[in-house]
Image 1 (cartoon, helix red, strand yellow):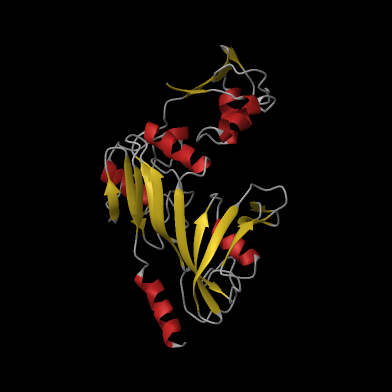
Image 2: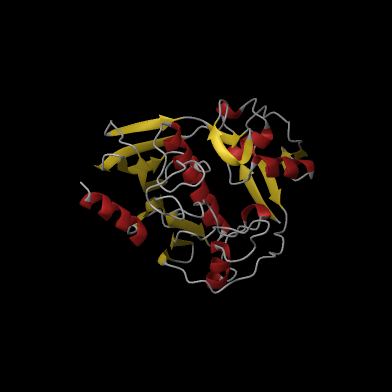
Length: 304
């Protein structure tokens, strides 16, 4: 059984332990609550419940149960591998490929492909059916994603994301002409209270910050770069739609009548940067904008 040790700080005093664990590890708050209920979280050697409030700086110990056997099968799906070593693998995900399995969609995902390529060399944090997955990209968003090949690498990369030290740059084509050359959208995101399949700007939701910069203008459209400071589900799509500039081709948050016949949003994770979890080396990778995206940009340039 793997053990994780966390050291509270003065700022942690009075905080619920399930929230503290979630904020300082890759463990979700709901899973932290379950671990507490199962007697797997101790403070000063004593088991504590999920509502226990941290009262001193005593080290907290968390026992992670044995990883459940995966019900997901490896599949020989071609991968566009940008970089790989014994700790991390960076892949360029194509549009249309789901990152991990979900009910009713247990095959044909990036996880299936990673399992085939890496074998047992993938992290297994949380015991969920998402081996190696540190962060996600929407099915119809293309671009770079880093996966972890062991738990130490997973925890290291996750901590960088939590501390906003990892760099993720996207490019997108949005509807409308953005007047300012650059800006920041700071609006909290949570599940849409009226449609649980969507995300929305919700007061009291999780903090979400997106920085954007205009790269090119096409009258009714704007080509932009977005830098994520946080990484909420559908963050760029929701943020841009909230300011009246939805992403072209977005079937969920976009406009109903699109000029271009697209099967998904024109959003591409172009650049990713992180500190290697073992060597400490700063690494940065970039990928080309997909052909279908480039074609739309070229059509708009010819119309100028």
